[in-house]
Amino acid sequence: MVIRCGWATKGPELMYYHDLRWGKPVYELNKLFHALALEIFQAGLTFQTVLKFESGLTSAFANFDVNEIAKYSDAQINVLYDDALIIRNHVKIDAVVHNAQVIVENPDKFKQITWGNTNNIPLDRQLTDKLNMSEIEVFIKKYTDQYKKMGLTRMGPVTTYSFLEAVGVVNDHIMSCEFR
Image (cartoon, rainbow, N blue to C red; front, side, top):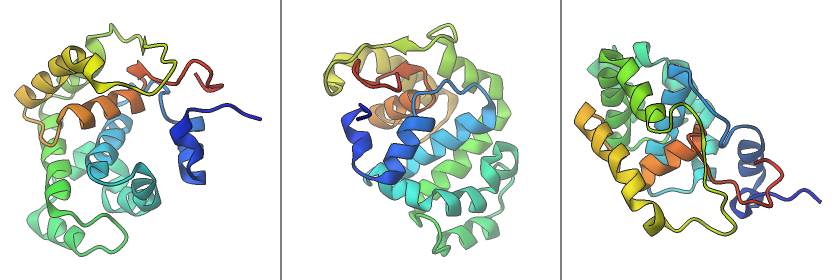
């Protein structure tokens, strides 16, 4: 029997995501933005729900090409609001477009904030149990402050930390997980 992080056993989409994507270091801008957008859409939902909409989101958001999304017009955004193939939360859609516009102004800064605090090396937290958010408050505050100073929105501590886990900045696979 394969041993995984507990959350990854709750459905096939989560298992696939966990085994092949979650926590693997990502350095390329559009892939970082893809992960960021998914985490923004996840707020208030299960990640399994987001993964069920990922194909539609990928299509609607130009394969998460940050340069293309940054140029979206109001008319294009209004089409997204009515697209049944995506999560149609206006605030989240607006945040993804806004964040693309901010990131294209200074993509190196976004990558530096994301990876610079760990010198481009994943931080292995060596978890033996579930994550306790109070343990990482100081660590995550510098990221949320830097992202907010840059102008990014919808980047609270939970979304930010989930993003850092997703792109491999932080390795939070439990120690017994075979996908560490």
